[in-house]
Length: 210
Image (tube, rainbow, N blue to C red):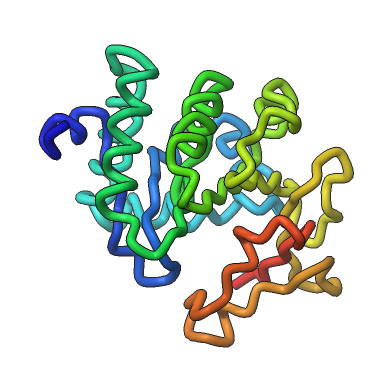
């Protein structure tokens, strides 16, 4: 496969300044659960950073929208999987990939495709944060690739971890954090050497509201 052919199915990024590895994002305006949560004060989506970024930077907005459009207009899910696997193998040099540093999973079919990408890149650790608990439940925890961790996010700031899932995330502000506290804010909003989000031995990651 040629790079230009792979890009017909969307583009992963290998230039994120906060975290290691490669990332993949789609249009945050198209989030299913997130679009509802944005209208609820105190929800983790009420002041969505990706929405702000897309409004501020037209090139980012266009890139995220294009990724989503190329998923929607894909010739087949297999071709999409092959294209993304090609890009991850080409650009992910340190073994870590994050799904949805902007936007969220769109459907059960998309989650199945992502899981297949993980299976075909066993040397890469994949992390997928999501608010789409219904999609994750429909997929089934037993079907998750061993190198893919799906962290289902609680909807409200200072909310408790969801007890229906093995791996979760929360946002804390006025209450103490649950489980492992992300220390990125103490490192200039940078992961540094931390890889807790990809670690299946850590059940909940709590991010401080900022």
